[in-house]
Length: 249
Image (cartoon, rainbow, N blue to C red; front, top):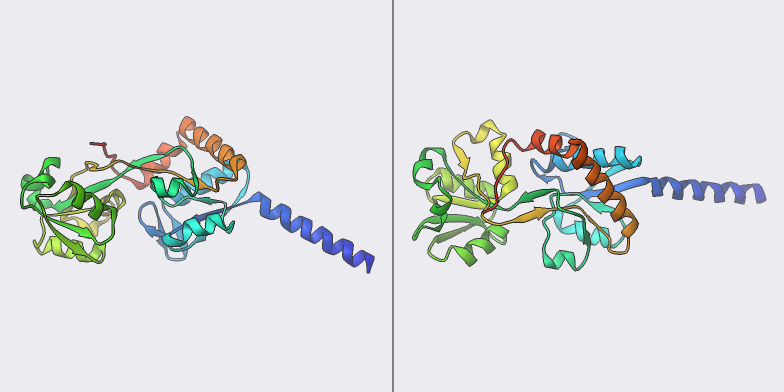
């Protein structure tokens, strides 16, 4: 009986040690090229980031997929250790989690038809009076458009596919959405008729997030990120998944 109890205790200790050595990374594989599914595999910029971090800090990495809306609750509840999922920094999130230093500048960008680049290809075109701008309902693009594009004719869509269809049907002149959407279009032959202005309309830095009560992990990940910057790993990963860099306004 005593031997059984000792064995059980040792198994519990071993399991706890293994869990401590595993970095549980929460991500939402629904945002190419940042993170998405390729068949059964989770790939993209953030997946590569997670694997690189694991190599640097000598910890096994477990990628835990979930919807975007569940990421913060999962982190707060201790079901994951870090969010690496193209998360933008804002005040509401910063009150709940600790963000690391941003690793990439993102924001809202305007997508247009290639054959209309002469008319709408310049950054100032989005501010024209009467320009027909499409946005996804509830998105950061809609927030930006309602705040800044007061002279535009806004049209709301339930998703990216609907907005792109309207753009191709010439029902709208521009589609304003996250930079990740523009980056994704640039890497696919299915969207050869579309082009992005390649100009950030807003500044939304992307960063990883940990629990506010875990400064040790934050410091460990900051050191890993600094090493990735210093040895060129971060630039290599970004260049692999994003064919063009964007400039802030």
